[in-house]
Amino acid sequence: MTLQESASPSAALEVTLGPLLYFWPKETVQSFYRKVCDWPVDRVYLGETVCSKRRQMSLEDWMAIAESLSAAGKTVVLSTLTLLEAASDRSMLRKICSHGQYEVEANDMAAVQALSELGVNFTTGPQVNIYNAHTLKELVDAGLSRWVLPLELGEDDFSAILAQARELNIADRITTEVFVWGLMPLAASARCFTARAHDLPKDQCRFVCLDYPEGLPVYSQEQDRVFTLNGIQTLSGRCLDLTAQVERMVELGIKAVRVSPQPEGTLEVLEAIQARLNHQPAGALEHPAGRCQGYWYGMAGMIPLATV
Image (cartoon, rainbow, N blue to C red):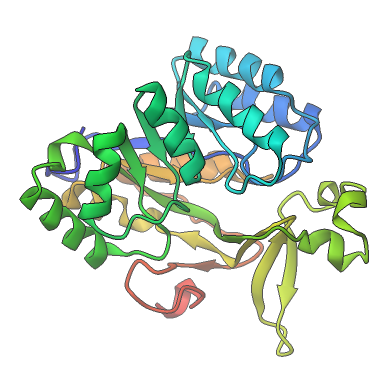
């Protein structure tokens, strides 16, 4: 499966489950992934990508889940932190990158460097800034085998990068994955906005993220949900929904689509995608935050889905 290959809408499209962005109790995480073993998903990303203070799940706990998913026939990828803030974060990064049993998704350039030095292939997440094929080529030469299209790029951007990748003779060396469902991760900061909302210092946050299993909504003065706070991460106010575009993505040569885990309804989203790929009626999807189509059409990312 490559960036260059073109396919008909009936061709296989890999459906992936992205890393869990939220802070859930350990038992909830373990229960969730036990269910994933039976879900219609091909590839599962595991690990903490947001905040290293979220320590209920140890690396050994994630590895136990990885073993169960592998036994169920899923491809497992270990995801790294988006923002490293301490020496302990670098130590954990080295453990993940050097583990050797599973592929790794690099979510910052420190992980890219570590994996490149180890000489192993890797994936980049949507917050690694790849905006043209020249950057893509640098990373492919360093070991990149798959990339997740940055969320601020759309169909036209991908087509332009694809054309450029063909000119650089790298199109057959890379697989493209696109984020199609979930609150969009927009930014990460050294500050913890969820703790600040509770007048708590970051180092004494009391793990208030546990109270918000799908983030803390932020509203404008007009009561429009504009963002969602998730610890040090800022997410979109509305849920990205590109599930209706998956057949078009196959035509474009995209080979994988990503669903972001959520407390409720993840299975229904996966089933809707599979229905579309099989040319069957897809169930209606809803999200409590409302839905949008992000930047796929080059418009403002928060425009509600119904008005696009």
